[in-house]
Image (cartoon, rainbow, N blue to C red):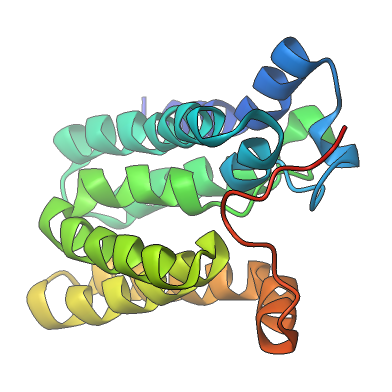
Length: 197
């Protein structure tokens, strides 16, 4: 049974939600519009705020369900975090789109809701405040990833969780490196900016 958990987590995470929903409702390949990213933020540029919410929620569930089940089966073990990692890697490197997916934020949120829900709530509040203040989802994602890491290291006992959170936060920041360049140059797209197809 242990072998199948990370395999299932990967393939569940690999379902390209944004690609499928944008293709179904707009008939376009999301990789050819906006930032080209296969994630909720870019889907929102095509479909609007409701589209963003739908994609984000589904991507979040892709991370939540396998980790929640693994946590109940295996407890706080290295194996639990292997399953968590597999779900996020599945989203970022999806086999269904030549291993080019999203940035892992929404799926990561689902993973951490299963692992440490209270800390996620605090980080989410920081995300909301940041996005409301600066109108940039990318900045909110980066800041909240940093805050979540700090909260986990302060509030949690599991060294597995602490190390996993740190590694994932660094990875998310790395995946947002182009966004960081645009933020610093003042060219990052702000929330609410739709694109013309």
